[in-house]
Length: 327
Image (cartoon, rainbow, N blue to C red; front, top):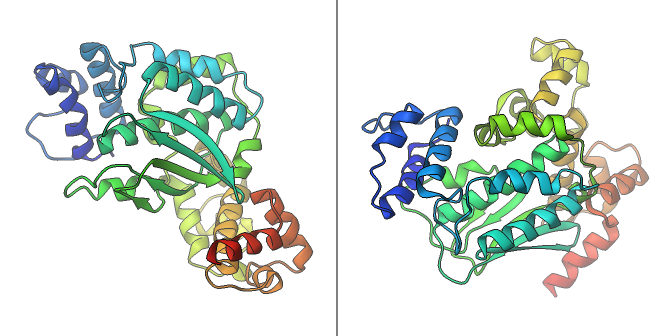
């Protein structure tokens, strides 16, 4: 479900153009008087109707309007990129040309990837959210899995009484920052693109409703599995077949359900371990051997290999980078 606050954010685009939003609400099946949340399908239909009425797929929130059809061209421009990094760089170039401002840039440091947004003028929080939603929706679809975020920054004040901004991304959210920023594990950048022309046609038929739902952090069986693992020490994590039995599913069905949500058991497990590893070796200053043991590794060498795969750097290099920042 999408909060009513995001509905009002979208309708403001029409109000700024002196367009009565009643027709758009009716076409999306949304009552103008209700305060209830709406479904992703309703919000997607509203988005499409506003784009037509305002002649802008970005709700009038950028320096230049994003003319209807731009999102389709964006998807076509990144479809045949070899890796997520190549797709992301193409997507940012496309959006920078189309929107003019805000502009996005990919940066990498300490095993983290950062998409940094700069703007020529003050932007609403809804502008940043819309940018992140469009970009993440396409990127997650391209690799067939949700990109687990580490941090989200907004270069604007927090909207009044809008906790939905804090809950939407499944990561720490900060306002009043100098730049908009989205942070995630740099290992995602090496993942291959798994989509083709046929799957793109299907994706576009369901957009934008599908990007509102398909890779949310709090959805379905993947969220239940993630919460189950987070509440248990890694050394006590049960085998996959036990987790399937707890969910009253067969292992094969659980795998299919996870895949349908753009997730896998290995990806969820690695996301949690990586997050905990950074905390143990960073804030809590545990040694590499102690961290490996707490994360359920029989040998520090196995943890070493995993950490390099996750972050692109060795545990020792990560600890040194933390020390350098604190000096």
